[in-house]
Image (tube, rainbow, N blue to C red; front, side, top):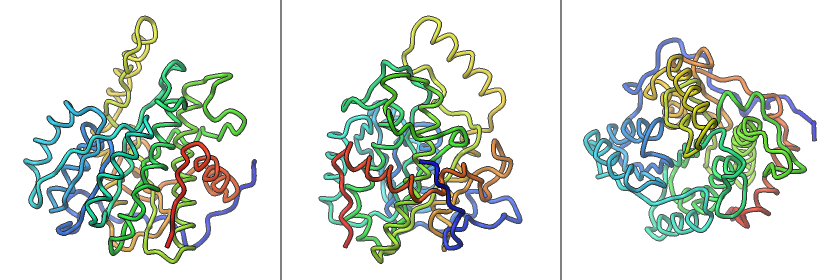
Length: 325
């Protein structure tokens, strides 16, 4: 599948920002409910803090409950509105995704903002999800695809719901390995990571297209943090040579990267800017660092053929089918 289409005019990214956009520019979020995955550290934690500081009711969907409990104190200290909450969620386990979505849907309230932030990077082949998927494809894409679909009824109860999915500059090197998307035959960890980040962009484009076709008010947009200091670069339990290489890589990246507070700005801009068009893509001004502006994307991310095919694959692998009104 190599068909690529140019970006349609109604999915334009935001224009160049004439000045530095910061958290001070976030509009009042009182009365809004925001679900942030991976909010126990890094970009997710900074995003949760910023939204809570503007009055949003923040639900921190996290895998590690001990880390989440510590992060909750930080978000609570920043909050000016409802008390933030922690929701157990392991995106690498579809049963956990269903439990979390059921818990949120049973409340009967709308979800104004879903930020698909959590992710893993460059994990070894031996790490698989509970459902047998490659850990990166399963967590970064399939888990968020399933969560968004299962939360669709709650999202559509909101007046103007928005889904923000976090990609990466690594998407530039990505392609969908259609014959082996879970990399069982030949596992190349960085290509597997790039595939998952391209999948985030294809998912965003197709979600926007389907939401518009169904006549809903849901907006789907994407963002990337550039090169930012987060725990995404940890070795995640590797031993021996792999652990030493991961540690060296982490030290090198940390020496070059911008802070997680700066890295969170593009996703906060994407989440809170009024009137942002569907399928917008926001990143740092200089790709690796800087204040938010429109971001360029891998040309494959414009392919409706690939976006549709990935959606159907995701339906088949997760058994989650979006129910539009």
